[in-house]
Structures are given as structure tokens and as C-alpha cells.
Amino acid sequence: MEAGFSLALRDSTVGIFGLGLMGGSLAMRLKGHCRTLIGFDSHLPTLELALSKNIIDHAEAVFPSPQMGEGLGVRVDLLILAAPVPSIINILQQLPALMPYPCIVLDLGSTKQNIVQAMSALPERFDPIGGHPICGKEKLGLENADPNLYQDAPFVTTPLERTTQRAKFAVTQLISTIGARLIEMTAPDHDRIIASTSHLPFLLSSALAHSTPQEFSPLIGPGFRSASRLAGTPSHMMIGILQSNRENILNAIQNFHNSLDEIESALQNENDAQLELLFNQSRAAYQSLTKN
Amino acid sequence: MEAGFSLALRDSTVGIFGLGLMGGSLAMRLKGHCRTLIGFDSHLPTLELALSKNIIDHAEAVFPSPQMGEGLGVRVDLLILAAPVPSIINILQQLPALMPYPCIVLDLGSTKQNIVQAMSALPERFDPIGGHPICGKEKLGLENADPNLYQDAPFVTTPLERTTQRAKFAVTQLISTIGARLIEMTAPDHDRIIASTSHLPFLLSSALAHSTPQEFSPLIGPGFRSASRLAGTPSHMMIGILQSNRENILNAIQNFHNSLDEIESALQNENDAQLELLFNQSRAAYQSLTKN
Image 1 (cartoon, helix red, strand yellow):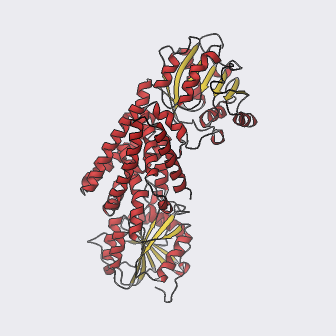
Image 2 (image 1 turned 180 degrees about the vertical axis):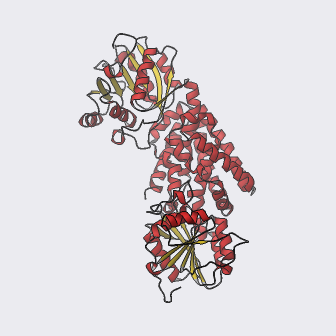
Image 3 (image 1 turned 30 degrees about the horizontal axis):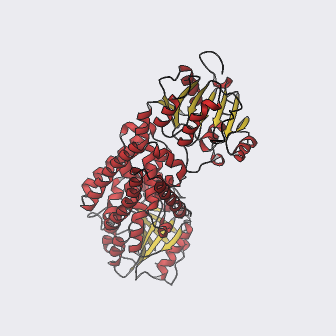
């Protein structure tokens, strides 16, 4: 780690832990904007693909616990954890043993309270900050990575009390370099909001696909495709997210039930004036929520 | 109307009643593939726009009931009703007074039982057939029309008992010309299926937008956009559709409730194995339903 207050991204060694859709897309966009870009992954073919596509400068194989623990071979200024939520927490727990050097630690996990809590247990040499870029797609993996994935996406950061200005400055440069929009907030606020804007839509898409008989397939149009798209997300990604945000998600489901019940009861009672009012409110809400 | 059993689309005069998103997109794609293309609309600026963009060969102003009734000025072989469901039913009721000539009548309405019923009351000179192209977008109007809107879209036809082979043949040519995929079924089957694959997704998108606080807007990402997109559909379009398919839609909502309740209860009980099972089933259902 360089001495001094500020850390210029272009002079930094950046490590990305996990070269899936999120980490791989980040690497693609970041390549050439930092001194050295190192990819850490436990899946050797992924590292080979990343090297062959020149997405990273250097590859380091890592192995999940309990084999993990030999130390990460190289020193980085900024380590970015791009893995599912439970893996991020697992890595954070092992990081003190793995990495003897000081470094800034940023994660890209979809929930923040559990992760920030795990970050708060890191030894003092680490300078941790929570992060969540709000982008992605239902097809995961390095083979679906896209250097423009982060363009114009909201990128939430949830600093800890101990997070230094130096870490914030490094992360601000990173977010600006990949074309995303920085939004700083607390981890509890993030988790409450994201339950409504991300986790609930996944559950609705999933329940919609689940409740639709297969024989209806010939009449599937763009509306159904759009409303059910998130149901294509691999479940192993979602389980960890949902585990770490259960209460907020249950609240978001309850709010959704209230709205759907209003619509259902207006439909049941043939109250078309009320239906129209509700749809107009929903349309205005949709337009305002998605205007950026 | 030409004599003889079959009617070649390229030798036909086709009238499109309603030059909004659906009718306008159809006209764009059909232009040049029939002898004459006539646009009927009550909105004069729409007719002027259609003429100035060379989307139709000839424009005829029509006026909604009760002023309507002077007769449609020109004779057509195939009349396509591209209007919201209640307007289609209204036009069908007035058609005997408006059009003294025989012609094939196809509609593009989103529900079929009410429309096919109204069609069955037409005098014998009309040769009616129900239709529903399953495509569209949440932004309506001729200004959003797109000649590729119908490409690869399912196009359901619901013939009546009285529908002739001649009408079916003409509609088959039309569907093939615009690049859509013909699916013939009964009106009750159509309405039951489309309640699940189209009307339910609209209601879910609408309830999702309705239940999301405006201050959550900064954290809206592509998942929310996709799941809520249909909430942008103008309500006046949807009310007529829902009115004409209430029972089927209430059943589809009930099936959705069952699936969401299963997910909610697994989440509540921290039964992650059950959650994973449900998500895997949903993902497989999504992939199979949307594979075409």
C-alpha cells in the first residue's frame, strides 16, 4: 500500500476476488485504468479465460475454506470482493489469515448489513467499505460479462465508522471510472430499500413463472418475458441474498400484498373507477421511479 | 369483394380501423403487400401523420357513436379492427349500418370471448374471425409504431363456426406477411390462457409500482425496471381488457397467490432447502415457457 493520504487508482494494484458476471465485467472496464489488475478465483478455467481474453494482468488461484489459508500471493492496494453474499462473509472471516498486508476492502454484495458487520471485525490494517452496484443480469458467469454493465448504474456505498477518507476517495475514483453513479447511505437503509426494489421483484417473477402452466407457453409475449425475466436468476445466488435480508423482504412482500389486494378487490367488485384510479397511480409511480 | 374461393392478399383492399400502436405497426408492415391500404381513424392528426409518412394509401375519417353512421366511404375486402376491446365491440355493433358491402372482419383485441360473441351477431354478408397478436409495448400510439412489432410474435386466431375457409386463408396470408406465428384456438381457451400470460403480469407490475415508495427511486436497477415495465401501460387500454376477462383473471391471481404464499412461508420459516426447490422449479418453468 502506498503511503500518503490519497490513492490514485491509476497507480494502484487492484485485486478482484471472483471473476463472475460482476467481477469479470468490472475487470473488463477497469483494465488499463489501474497499474495492475489481479484476478482471484477458485475456478481455474475462469482464470485461464480471463487471462486469455486479457481481462486481467495476473491470475491467482484461491481455494475455498478449509483448504484456503496459504495467503494471497500478491499485495494489492484495493481488494474487491465480487462473490455471492455468503462467500463474501466467508472471505472476510478468512482475510486476516490470508492477507498480511494493509489494504482497502470493497465488496459488491447485494445486501449490506451482514457484510458491514463482518467487515467491522477485520483487523486495523484493513480499510473496509461496503458497496453494491445495482446492475446485473439473469445470466451469470464470466462468459456473460460486459464492460458496459456498470454504465449509469447506481453504485451504493455503505462506509463503516472506521472507513477512511482515503478508502472513500479510492472507491469514488473506481465508481467514476466504470461510469456508475455513487450513492452513499447506511447499510440498514440500503437493505430496507433494496428489499423492495430488487429482492421483491425477483420473488414476484419467480412466483409468476411458478404459477404459469407449461402448456401456456405458445401464448407467451414480451409482457410475460419482461415480468418473469428475473426468475431466470440461478437460485444459489438468491438464497444467500434472501437469508441476509429476510425481515425487510417479508415487509416488502406485505406491502405488495396490500397493493395487489386493492386491485383484486376492485376487480372482484367490478369497481372500474377504482381500478382506473389504482392503475393511474401505479403508472405515475412507475414513471417517476424509473425516470433516471 | 372479389369472387371465388380464395382471396390473394396482394390483390385485396385492406382497411385498418384504428391507427394506434397495433394498427399503425400493422399498416407499416403491410404497405405494398396488398392492393390498397386504407386507414380509418377518428383522430384526424393521426390520419394526417399516417398519410404524410406514407403508411397508408388512403385515409378515412370515422367518428364514434352516435355521430358515426354515415357509412364507411370505401369498400374493403378485409377490415381489421385495431382498437381497445370495448371500441371493437362498439364498432362491431355499428358495422351493419356502416358497411353495406360484404367483407372479412378480423379484430386484434386482447380478449376474444366477448368479441367473438359480438361478431356472431353480424349479418351474413360479413365473414368474421377473431384475432390477437401477442406483442405490443407500454408506449402506445402511431408515433411508437414499428414495422417489426409483429415479427415472430404469436398471433392467435379464434374462428367462429361460420368463419369461411376464405377468411382463414386471407388471415393466414396476412399473418405470414407480417412475420407472425399463427396459432388457432377457441376463444374461451385463449381468454383463460392470456389471463395468466398477459393480464396477470400487468397486474403484478402495477401492484409492484404501486407498493414502492417514491423515495426508493435512486436504487432502481434493471430488475425493477423489467418487472414493473407493464405498469407503464395506459389504464384506459387495460380497463376494457380486464372487464372482458374478469373471472379468468381472478383465477390467475389466485394461482399466483398460491405460489407467492409458498415462497413467503419458506422464507418466514427459514426453510432454505424449500426456497431453493421453489426457485429451481420457477427457473425451469421460466426457461421452458420463454424458450421460443
